[in-house]
Length: 256
Image 1 (cartoon, rainbow, N blue to C red):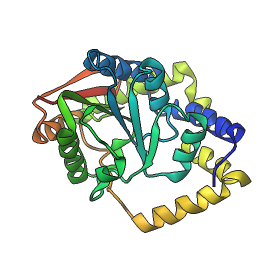
Image 2: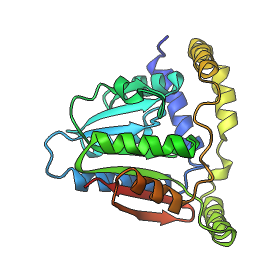
Image 3: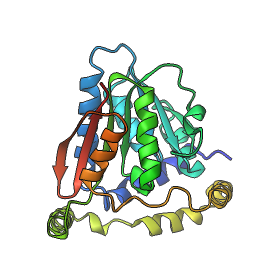
Image 4: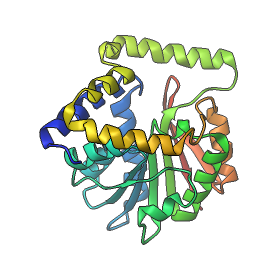
């Protein structure tokens, strides 16, 4: 059920372009996340990092390049994206299929020591509020003292006026960057589904999704302030934004 290196390269590169439509300042956001992880692991010989909702390894690959001594575990529920990552970025991480927030999901990760950082980008917004809180609590239990959760995503602001303004700023930057000319999410998946080499993985993906049903709900309407409050409820006393452009943020929570 594996794919060739050429096929993985093709679809991962198209994935990168497609994602630029949605993640405002994507490369800068990746860089900031790496800055945070670099800072909190400066005294660690082999930091242990967990990439949540890793997709085809975009963030994991960048962290591996920045922190070559790190051990990275990359988790996602999508077997097709995981296989693309394993093939295209084989040395960046250990890829694990896991349904974030599901019962016992961290048992599948094979962690043998406390985490130094749990990172995510444009992934946790699909979790419902109760599932997200449970996930934050589980991460707090897995992190060492001084470890961090770093979440880069689009977060709604408090109140329609501020939300409308930040969304407008995001749209204007996207227009200036001309990323809206890239293929969108639906087009990428439709095109990939026509690749015969990916047929078995699409079949497996369909069976996995059918078994999960409507897993997790949708927490995309949660505000930045609500995310911060959930992190505090989960035991993180120090929570703050270290980067923002429009409605795109990098939110950091530090475990005492």
